[in-house]
Length: 462
Ligand code: SF4
Image (cartoon, rainbow, N blue to C red):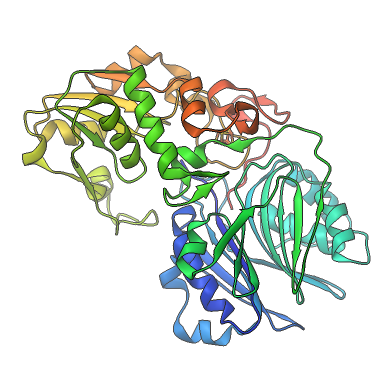
């Protein structure tokens, strides 16, 4: 499952803003490993550096030294082979007369194609398929004599999910869609401001978390902080997969430490699907906390049964078919002597297509596990996501095609237990009406048309 993008912005005169963005992007690397970029302002013009690759590969010391400015934005982006469109490195730089900006986006604008057609018809030329470019062009060409007016007009045209960090020559802007699908947080640093997809980025640069940017809020940050609120006609729809999988466990998302939410997911699974076993094992890293939660609630000891090679990045390209077939083995290694002859509860975050899990189960069996009881934090995924998560078309989702007993048999596990939807919501600790749960219950927070292979609402990879 692929989510798209980590964004960061800083307004901090007197500090090395490009380097701050660089370190913040390191913290957000899990949200996107295809490309990274930084834009800075010196008060008159914007400078930018973007390239494909991991943050550590993209920027040299000389690149960072050349990016001088009192404010900056940065972006890490994701588009793996399964993504519908290639990744467009961001920030996106856009000019129109005296208006210029660099824009970093996380989300999916579902009416981007219609807006692109409209802008092209007015004579604008696009360089990419990215909806970030649509948003950027929409803002710089919108009516208005101030950024507030232009943003107000442009953002009111967007449908879907967006969290934005925008840099103009003078001001840093943060904006979040009225449904609040993707996270965006505000912090302070040495009298200045920072915004980030996740609070873990603040911790790494010594910034203090202040609050989440509110759904529909637009913040203009310079020496002062001003904001306005877009009309909120629809419902709230924070993506519950941030707590299950996307966000780092040390981030606080919508007021809840992700690690705690995952502990609670594991505890709920232990209540809903108890089993007699010797050890609880988590599939690292996203399910480790949930496995510990299961162990605590069940009284079954937790044990590390799989080690993850963290240096096999998501951009890793296996050079030949033999290595590609190894797939999961390149990523995980079972601790054979610890799991041989043991009955294991194995906790994982989710099952999407069901292509990876059988390999993990095989690894454990080959290492001698006597029983494998699989417990999944997410309820069965039966509906595709229209809001920017490149998960799969409906026909690819294993739970849309098979019953739970059929999936158990297909995966070759001794028992299989998914979290219930109420159990998940209780573990996340947010009211159900604030969450998007559409990939489980099909209750989409915006109108979508089901097509033969999924959703007619566009899903762009950023
Ligand atoms: S459909 Fe699922 S993955 Fe997509 S935004 Fe909603 S909860 Fe998140």
